[in-house]
Image (cartoon, rainbow, N blue to C red; front, side, top):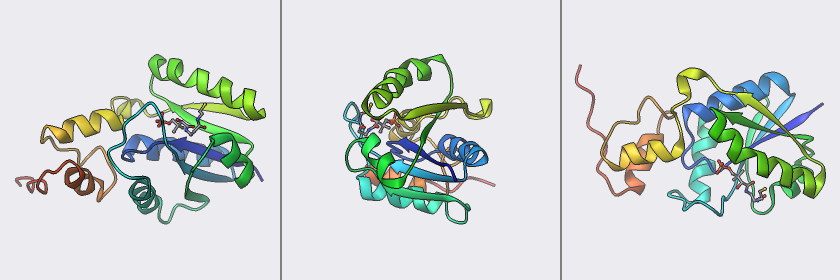
Length: 166
Ligand code: PNS
């Protein structure tokens, strides 16, 4: 049985994350979604909220669970018995960002990273862009799982989104 970890800051979880986790689950017996802290980012949502939203998004998905990563990713992988990390790539910029982390994780513990190419239809979906759209009162309904938009808007101090006109 091979366990994979899909780590990220998930601030917030997007449909792009769902796509990557589904692809990882198709390759490995169990996927642990690891909600971690990225020290180079200023997070909008507290970790507990990010975990809660991710758990809601994966309800009913067999072989997928969500956990908080409170320290080093390599220590977390050891704890859950994961042999591999899976990350999604939207393009070359993602690879440039991911490669040093993959090399560092291998340096620290021998952990391998497998990259999957996400759906091209979601190549523009990034948590940072989603937050920027929401911050400017744009709709993010079709970029994130159900319930996420309301939480993001509340965290940004915005009123609930207007209902879409029929
Ligand atoms: O979604 P992100 O922000 O690109 O994910 C980056 C993340 C959270 C996976 C990375 O910052 C991480 O692994 N954080 C946990 C602490 C850690 O192990 N840092 C060393 C990474 S090489």
